[in-house]
Length: 65
Image 1 (cartoon, rainbow, N blue to C red):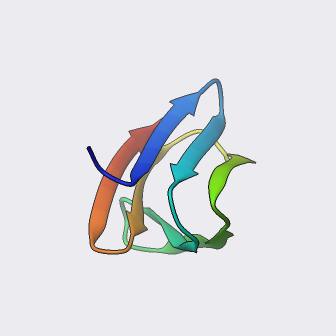
Image 2: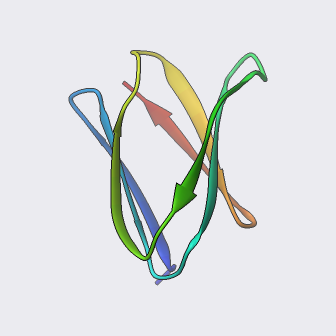
């Protein structure tokens, strides 16, 4: 089981992390949309509809809204 979990739900991105870090939200076009500082626990952010790659530590997650 990984220490990070990403779920998209009706325009809201939920990131649950076991330790603090940084998440980078990148569009499929390669443009950085946002860098988020992640505390331990759950972070929620509303993002525009589209497809994103969320990069956290050495892991990448593909999310589509």
